[in-house]
Length: 405
Image (cartoon, rainbow, N blue to C red; front, side, top):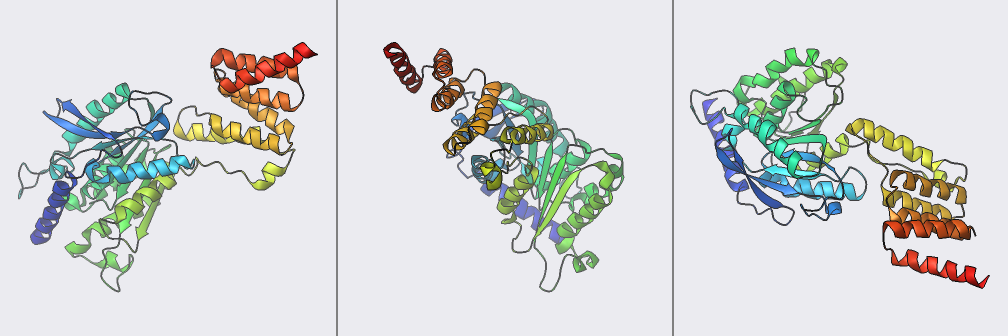
């Protein structure tokens, strides 16, 4: 067991050293945060959503935040995933904060080890830094919302589960990717047996990914009878999952997945994607073609109901996207469903009363329906909010026509 432990430790140290050599600047920027708790300066990598221009000085909205352990190794993949998903409305645009490791084995473990005194077991101090220094700094400096996700792989997954058990309200969603739950004689797995039945996890989400490290002919059922160190990681995760499944009354939203064709390193990417798809599965708006074609179907009511549910899930008010509603309004107008178009344009004005574009769009609706008076009023209102050349041109044309009449 000692030789197994040492070989695993060497692998964990090696991963940490390699991770710090990766350049993040294609997807974000680096900051250095002084920490009184850790007594050192810590590097963090930050991504601001492309929908906000990717610019930390602009503020076109407020965003949920993903806090990412081993950020120097996981940062680029998570940023790519969130940008892809948000582009297709599978999740909200999100800020990503990658925490660059300093001494990852030390800061991602809890509990002393007699073979490695002083080398491991500073996890509580590290998480105190995250909770009391890093998160407050991000909230003060950047346009954040209250929704936070915590992602970790390997020892990072161990830290995620430990935080989930002992500080469940620190984050809204937790993602453990092949977490090292074998650590310290399965300390977290054993603690979970008494914590899970008594904790209320309402509004919390947990996703667990497991890689395939099994010998030929062994499956997730038969491996549970094994006692060797080489299967300790997967057996620990399976036992933890069994205990999670027993405690359905604690209201936790939970999913796990075994990746038969992925190993410990490769499970990160696919696990991150599947985790975020699961966490935000409520976010996607589904409109059927039959609903778009039905002149009596109330699209505005569907949108209001959908975003009410999204707001409840996220814990703060989220309005339908202005461009999304605007495009739907023009689509309905193009198919001569004027009643539906009007309700959509008016919904946009209700949600975005200071948007010149919303008034310009409803002006187009009135113009299409021959109501020149309301069209003129709308274009004038649009121009008081924003100098839109198209609105000015349309207004001038209407005013010239009035003079001729």
